[in-house]
Image: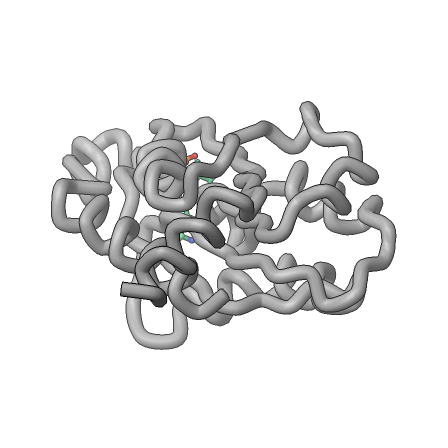
Length: 167
Ligand SMILES: Cc1cc2nc3c(=O)[nH]c(=O)nc-3n(C[C@H](O)[C@H](O)[C@H](O)COP(=O)(O)O)c2cc1C
């Protein structure tokens, strides 16, 4: 009971932000919304972020589609501009055409390394499939039609609950 009360208090007083870039089919936006509901987090685009304002948040999620094996350039550029922090908690997420064991880890490496070099602690990472009609794929109706699906959104919620629990 006491724990439950403390957890409620923590999630109420905790200030979370999600920095999102999603343009191809708004796939990652769907994941961001599912996560934001659990964390009660505001969602902003990189261009809306004043790097200094991140200091005011206890938890920051960074997510986009994967384009050429990395997060979107706008997130990578933002990470370059961020001031140094001391162990600020953050998490990474993405949607991608191809997923699988250790794929997320590789796709997230560029952003992870930039953030870690600024003093961010990445507490967890999430990736799922996203509809992809890039290049020649559109000629065949694309890959991963319907993704993220309901199960992906549930998995994103479960991920967010785990992040919240491990804060
Ligand atoms: C220009 C471009 C490059 C892409 N490169 C990759 C890639 O390197 N690896 C991958 O798994 N998916 C790749 N994809 C697929 C996207 O990651 C996938 O469709 C993602 O869900 C898009 O997210 P969004 O709708 O939030 O923008 C690429 C898509 C585009 C449009």
